[in-house]
Each structure stands twice: as structure tokens, then as C-alpha cells.
Amino acid sequence: MGLRRIFKILLSLVLGMFLCVTCTAETELAAPFRALTLHEYVAELDRMGSAIKSLDHKKPDISKLLQQTPTLWRVQTEQQTFEIPSEWLRSDLIDLRDDPGEGAQDSIVDRLQSLRSEAAAFETPRPNSSKARAQLDSILAAGEFDSVHGPTWLERLKQRVERFLIRLLGRAFASSLIPTLGNVAVYGLIIVAVLLLAYWMYRSIRSSGELETILPYPLPISSKEWTLWMSEARTAADRGKWRDAIHLAYWCGVSFLEAQGLWRPDYARTPREYLRLLPSSSEYHPTLLALTRSFEVVWYGKQEADAAAFSQTLAQLEKLGCH
Image (cartoon, rainbow, N blue to C red; front, side, top):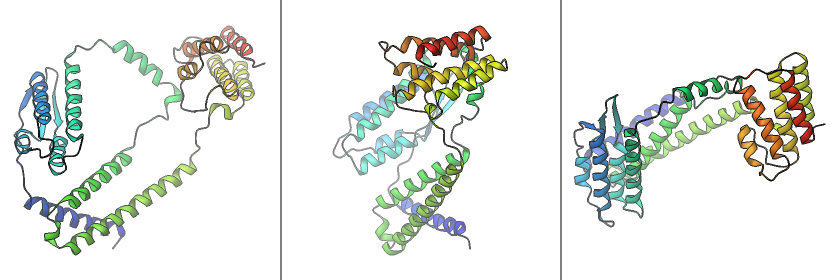
């Protein structure tokens, strides 16, 4: 029997134990959910926020609130229908009843206020952003954004499993009915499950670390001397690739300034962020501003580049001190 199969069996036992505990514990029925208009949804959030604010800080009575809280809010607008989970609210209310710590009520009210702000913003007519969207799509279509992506589905799955197990074990430890089920058996299963979970996470982190050591780590711009950037820019210009030449010449200037210690190296910084790092009083600021503008209109704005544009870029580099 493999380790993965043993882990699944123990996880099933722990889940079954937790269900038995919660079945015998005090339960609160959720209110049936119905379709709300956006205005009714905002009013419901206001009502819940006011009711939570008025709870007793030392011994809050949340039974009525739990009965009035559905498992989700279904909000219907002219464009579409949204389903907004409210299970977090029921869970936080139960935690507030079991442990009415300082600031717990304010935390719930703040989250309700955040939902209300999002709903109120949705009511505001949105400006036509098709032109801005088209320009953004054109910028993101550039080759330097090809490798940018969010978390993979496997990473998201790991995060969900870890959150579920941590929440499950946390509730099991907080239950006052565990001693009645047999302390030795229950805590023994929990300890074994935690050890297996820790081993699984250790293996995942170790395998991820091994993969990261194989892949090349991005280096700061100044790790390649400005003279090499300049050489590559002139080579691109000799081949008639003027856009690439201006692109490389711009990073030549950034590498030169970074080597002077004008800012702390960071490979993820954007051109505009480099420009903001220099105070307007700096002698390099006007030159870097001109370099940035010419680079942006050619590289991001798709403006045609030629030998004259490259010559102007070289002249700006001369002003910086890239002789």
C-alpha cells in the first residue's frame, strides 16, 4: 500500500470523525437564499453590519444572525446574476461566539463594508474602456510579456487542499466533544494526519526547490555591463533592426545608472519606475526621461524607428556618460 493511499485513508477517517463531531454539536439552520436586486443586497449588507455592531462584546448571541444568513447571496442585475458566497460570514460568526476576541466584530463589519463598496461601485456607470483595453492588449502582446503568468492549476489545487486541511484540523481541535469520542484514538489519528501532511508538504517544497535551481534566475540589469548592452545595440543597428537597437540602447543607459549606485537593483522594475527613482533635481533625470519616452513610443507604441531615432538615442547616452 503506497504512501498516497495511506494518506487518503487517514484523511477519510479524520473527515468522518469531524462529521460525527459536528453532527452531534449544536447546529444552526441557514436561511434559504433568494434572488436580490443590487439595491436589496446593499441594504442586506448594511443590516447585517448594524446587527453585528450591536452584539454584546463579551457574550454575543449570534443564533438569530445565523438563521438569517443564507449560504450564499444571489444578486440579479440587468446584465447577469451573481452568486456571492456567505459561508465565511457564518464561520466567522461561530468563531466570534466561541471566542469573542478583541476586534473580531470590527473585522467582520469591515469585510461587509468592503462587499458593500464593491456593490455600490458596480451601480456606477462604467466608462467605455474599449480603446484603453485595445492599447493594453497591444502592449501585453510584446515578446517580453510571453513568460508572465499567474499560479498554475496545480499550485492553486495545493493551496486549496492545504487551506481545507488546516481549517478541518483547527475546528477539530476547537471542538469540546472530542474527549467524549476517545482521546487516544482521536488525537492519535490527528497526529498521524498532521505528520503525513507535513511530510507531503516537505516533499512538495523540496521538489519545487529542485526545479527552481534548474531554471535560470532573473538577474538585475547591471549584472551585464553597459558596454555589452551598447555593443548589442550597435550590432542590431548594423542589421537594420532599429526597434531592437533602441530597446538595447535604453537598457544600456539603465545599466550605466544602476552601476553608479543610484538605486537598488531589481529585475522586475518597469521603465517608469526607474524614472521615478531619480529625483527631478538629479542631473541624470532629463536625459533618462528623454530615453524613456523614445523607448516607450518605439517599443510599446509601435512607432516606426530608423537610423535618425537611433542616433538621437545614442546622443542621449553620450549625455549620461556612456562614451
